[in-house]
Amino acid sequence: MEKTLMIQEINRLKKEKNAVILAHYYQDGDIQDIADYTGDSLYLSQIASQTDADVIVFAGVHFMAETAKILSPEKTVLLPVKEAGCPMADMVTKVRLLNYKEKHPDRIVVCYVNSTAEVKALSDICVTSSNAEKIIKNYQGQKMLYVPDKNLGTYLREKYDLDMEVWPGFCCIHNDLTLDQVAKMKKKYPKAELIVHPEAKLEIVKVSDFAGSTKGLLNYVIKSNHNEFIVGTEKGIIHTMKKACPDKKFHILSNGLACYDMKLTRLEDVYLALKEDKYVIEVEENIRLKAFEALNKMMKLS
Ligand code: 13P
Ligand code: SF4
Image (cartoon, rainbow, N blue to C red; front, side, top):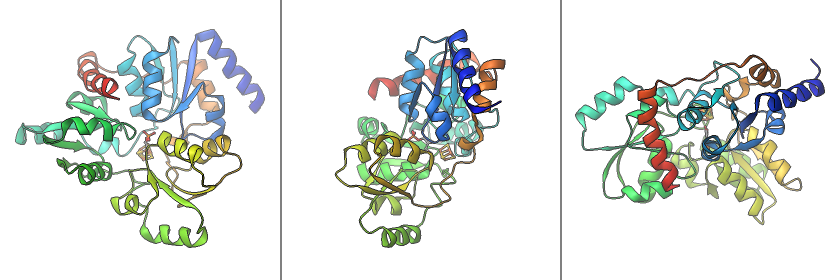
């Protein structure tokens, strides 16, 4: 089907089914442009819990759609591409976390939103990259475990001097960034500021001018007096940044900054999701209730 026609059909089906499309900033520009809301994990979770639509089409990865379902169980939540997952979210499993908790019953489990419902259900509280610093301050002085992102966990531990163990998970694209790449890009664009997502290693975050969630990075470039940026996060966000700041320049820190799973979703998948009601996300009720507690605590402290 031709693109303009497909967009018309998406809009028609959206009305017919009282649906809303949420898209993460890492989605392709085409998807971000047809979405009703684009944002970071926290913002999209907040929208999912507040919308009065009957159907949520989540253009993102599995844990995001699952989080929407946990927060809005009465709604139909659709993930356009069944296989779109987050490899980091799968680096901590229910069995391993239970095993850890048995050995360390005194540690509060802080769970990054990039995790499965089962892991959230075993956690005391969830965080995202945009509220982790604010929330973690409430637990200063207590024993904690942070799952699954070792980089964001280490960043928090160092910055706030926490008694926090960190799980050895990581994001395969942010974790690959190197100081060598930073040096080359700074040499090529000496006037540009370096902005990075805290899923990058601490050594990269330390040499950056600003580190924050995808929304944090976007707000930073909008407000900054600088005109040029080296961007250390998934390249989809450059579409959003260019739209918000057409006169500023953005250079991706590495061409490897493309999330394979985020890029699986195409316009046609969004259309088919709406047309054929696929793929429906379900969460077992006893798991959902426990995961909801950890997410709800986060929402209240955000
Ligand atoms: P944000 O919460 O900053 O949108 O990040 C989600 C993510 O998956 C980053 O890799
Ligand atoms: Fe997961 Fe990394 Fe992709 Fe974010 S960018 S969804 S953390 S694999």
